[in-house]
Length: 179
Image (cartoon, rainbow, N blue to C red; front, side):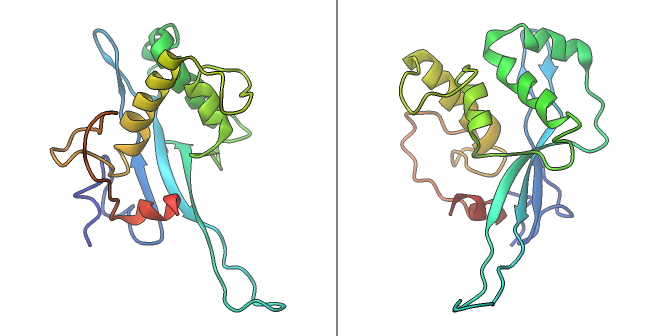
């Protein structure tokens, strides 16, 4: 199955049933674009052992947000984006995954760190307490910058908006991240 035709920013050398890496699209600023140099990468855990009373080996896939290899960040565009409330989350995320501590591993896509950046909170205090406008903006950012690149999109090719009446199906390598 050719994955590159249905996944934004991928190339066929980087997407196969065992591994895939795609670009997170740039954010649109007033007069320019800001590319944070981030990718979503699917990685599989090692197989579990057969020791003990285990009927079969298994392994799980996880998606990570990682720094794009050999990417030169436009620091001027980053500075502009960092001062726009709507895009501050992606600047913070980029700085985090480019830090020495996370440069090699990245951050899990389904992590509370990413959720706290999207919800514009230093610390998440459970599932409630997020203002409606912030929650809607976070959902929109999730759809545009995380779901769209991995292939979850409207049949017309655009990202799926909150009230679009479409049946979702993901038929590529990234489906393993959502099991």
